[in-house]
Image 1 (spheres, rainbow, N blue to C red):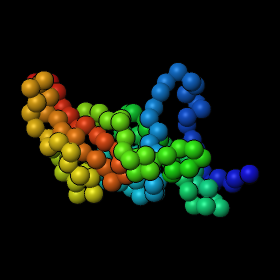
Image 2 (image 1 turned 45 degrees about the horizontal axis):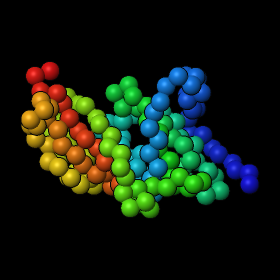
Image 3 (image 1 turned 30 degrees about the horizontal axis):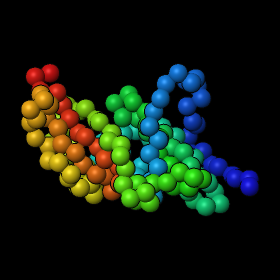
Length: 144
C-alpha cells in the first residue's frame, strides 16, 4: 500500500540522531489534538504530515518548553486511549503556574481527575485528562 504524505513543515526527528526519546501520543482526531495542545499548553507546532488520501495525521511534532512530543492519528496498529479503555501513562508537565495551565486545559475540554493543590510531597500538582484520553500531571515544585 503506497501512501502520499504532504509535509506541512520539515520534520526534524532524523536530524537529532537516535540518542533521545520523546513521547508519541496516539489520538482520535490528531488535528484537533494539536489545536488543543497549542491552546492549552502554548505548545509550538514544529511539523505535521497529513496523508492526502485519508486526511489522517501519521506524524506531527510539537515543542513545549524545549521538549518535543509527537501526535498521530490512531491507525497502523497504534491505538488511542478511548479504543484501549484508558491509558496507564501519565505525562508529568512542570510549569511556573500549574493553576493557570489547568484552567486553560479545562477551558479547552480537559477534565479534572485530581484538583491542583499543594501536596504533602512538596509540589503544587493535580491531574487532568485531555479530551483525547491522555493523562497529564500539571505541577510545580514548591519553594523552587
